[in-house]
Figure: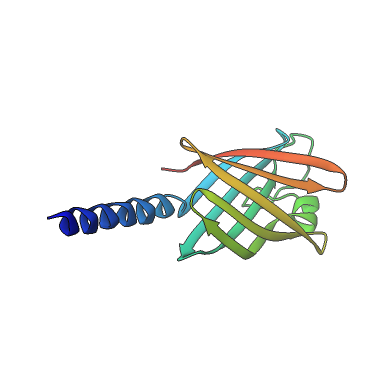
Length: 134
């Protein structure tokens, strides 16, 4: 009887762990610095994280956006990037993208229904809060 309870408890916690990790998969949207729309498309496979990182300039002074909303500056400097070196550890994620050809490492945590991302750009700490798109 005790063995059955122990096995049931282990299975229960395994299912919860898998379900929690699965909530990371999907599209997440939010803002960086109130000016840039950020869209992450994330997919987990075990502890590995892959996807895309798309930044769109939300500044009304930006000129000549393309059909997707990317201005020439954003398309050249930020735009869409592939996520590399992505890892998942429970509700925490890390991944790398590039900006101007240089790697930027992001760290994120899912808190309630939000994904809070941080990175350091030069000497400035940057934070973004995203919600999962329905």
